[in-house]
Image (tube, rainbow, N blue to C red; front, side):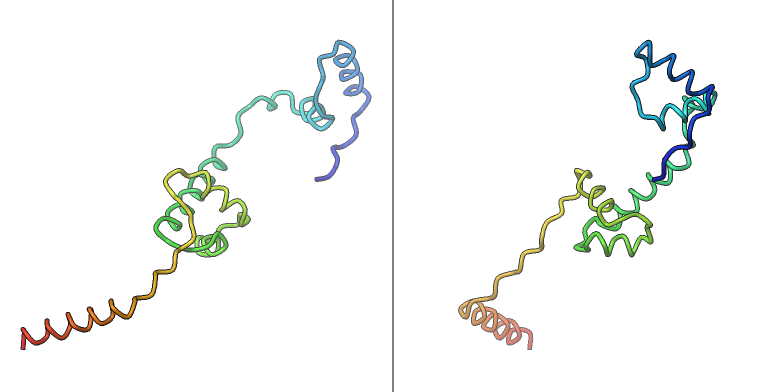
Length: 128
């Protein structure tokens, strides 16, 4: 981010007056924003960004539920402009989704394979 523009003399005087009373204890950029936009400074932001974040979060969670996709794949599928770490953060914050590695299933032992073949032979003989 770039620096905030320099203050004019009137703004400097206002800040000096406030700082002598020990009221101003914030960054220079915050002070300039306040002094330039005093009427709109405490106003609420547009709700559009909030609803956009909610829909993005919902699409991430919908895509991730009951899937083994990585965060980067989820981001690509949902066509989200957010970073991979943002997707990971949304998934980690959700208590309903437990992300874990898939475990490999164990190989069948020779005895188990023989039992399966025996069962298949016996079951096909009875129906024929």
